[in-house]
Length: 106
Length: 114
Image 1 (cartoon, each protein chain N blue to C red):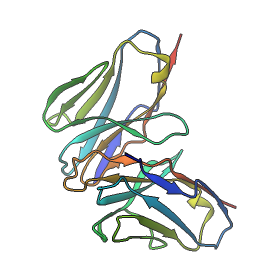
Image 2 (cartoon, rainbow over the protein chains, first blue to last red; image 1 turned 120 degrees about the vertical axis):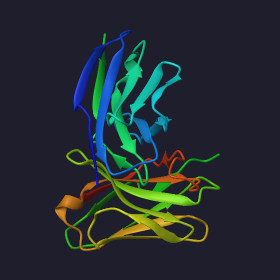
Image 3 (tube, each protein chain N blue to C red; image 1 turned 30 degrees about the vertical axis):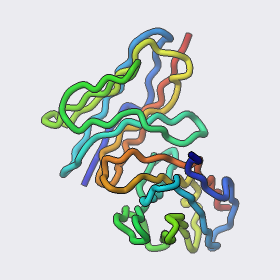
């Protein structure tokens, strides 16, 4: 089975950097996804990590360590529009964590 | 390219009734997955259909079922509705060739069971 843990809520200041952690216990997976979901909207794809290490995509980066069962999403230069829930998921089929609700404040 | 569409967007039913939800995937996508989203449990996988066959199934009772048509459109059915079935039901489509394929989500159907 798979168990995925994320913090429930986080608050950060506009312009700052925030790291959202995701730990998992799983019997096996191909890769790890991060999705963003604004309130009342559908989740949208942010990143997919297969190999250990950091994948950078603009202001967002995602990191995976298979040996430690750990991933994080790093958001830089936070903007108010980044206020959303961030969902970590392992594939094969997708199993999601409960999501981290990020609030960006001025 | 049109996105994933779901109908209806909102639905109110009473306990014991049954409901059918519809999902039209992005053109060219052969895989459709269904999820239930609630505040307490988050996003939970229901099942995945690929080329008209159920390829994967989550841990939901048999009251939840689905099917996929030859044009990749999919429906899910919930029979004998319970209060706990109130949720946002999301479908997502992907090419389906690999579990690594990005899934594109529809706007969801908000089901309320009274």
